[in-house]
Length: 311
Image: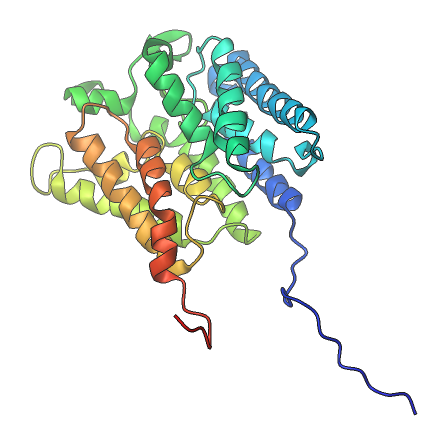
């Protein structure tokens, strides 16, 4: 009679069929509606910016891995996702050398200097956008729609030009000035719904982030207490793009649901304070980058202690 053997193996014992490649593929599918909307409203300029940004990210990662004699990782699609997200955070009229520089910075400095995929401490696309904005502020804040230079709705609110604000329908579908991937709320919500359906993200970060901005904007208001228009303002700027696609990044967001709620609350608070009281009309990028730095602390206080662990 054959002896029954107890097989002992190291963790993890629970495995998933998800890989970096399959997750990134789903993210790219979710970003497609916003890319189509960008092409529809901004024309061929949008495609050129996206193409150059993606090419820069992929080439930078391939070259870095080759120079360090490491296995190529461009097949996991993460470089393509970073390239698309970086392009989505740029104006349609930006000179093409800017996304090229941004792609190199995002991949080499922000991602691979810290060890590659899963090791970066802040979101590469947002960090690159922040550097480009600080270095070339005029090019990064020139917005066009239908070939005409215009101000973004957030900038109009900041200036107090309420009468010049576009109607809500234009804001929702994306017929306003802004970065490539942030203007069409409808397209971003469609992509977010797909990610939720595929269980790539959970609702905690997007809902809490957007909800916090909406409530604080209503209460604090631009014209005083309880004077805000939360529905209008939650559709402006990069809030939807940041809440759905940036703040949910696995590497730079907390691991626990409790931690994700704390993280999203912090992002929402900082975004509102920058928008209402800061000198810059938008606050999403900087809010997420700042909260990225607090993720290790949030994880430390929210991850439950291992059973049997001795301090």
